[in-house]
Length: 265
Image 1 (cartoon, rainbow, N blue to C red):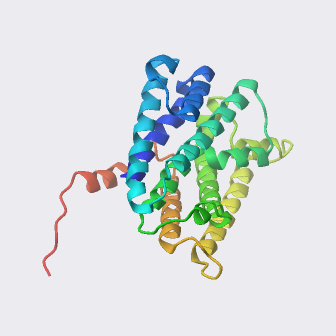
Image 2 (tube, rainbow, N blue to C red; image 1 turned 90 degrees about the vertical axis):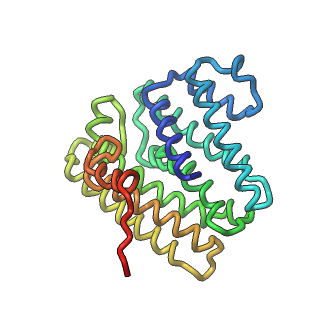
Image 3 (cartoon, one colour; image 1 turned 60 degrees about the horizontal axis):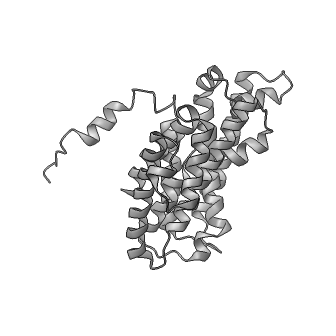
């Protein structure tokens, strides 16, 4: 339920930061989450901000309470920080678009692996896989690297499939930046090949980290959750942008609508 609810919310927030919200609304939403205890009827600059903030706060509090029963220490503040990271990364991308800035590939990816929005989906879900996670594990470089590699793959897969849409909206992504910083000699096909090579490399690094046992402090169940999300991302963006494609609908309907028929042994 944590995974599903935050998955829906990240989609709403992503659309809001991309096209639905103004800069004033984005800044206001960030300030509200930073303050947390606010009067929504007074402090929200618009109805849209009020709706999104209320949904975020209610969901974060719900997940925080349920995680507390499993973890002992409160993790609500960590979940809030994960959402703040996402919102601030979305604001930065909005500023790049508004100012017509051209970031370096490193600047883009440092922000982009966060703005893809996987953090609020996966990281809170780790509290529910059966292990008590200490502050040392939650704040470890190992867990962050698992998250970064998974999200980097997601960002690059998304950017390949979303290239035409982003270009039509005047937005830069990893593919267009590869071509721009290639001094005009890198073709779209060459840029795609280069990015696919990076995805393959990052996926290999992620798998090695998932399978690593010596010196690892992150429970295997948490690693498996990260790896499963990576597989979801590769499936979601295998042919196109999974949000706008219709090929997966029969599979989704089969899971949610069609009855399960148990075969007799």
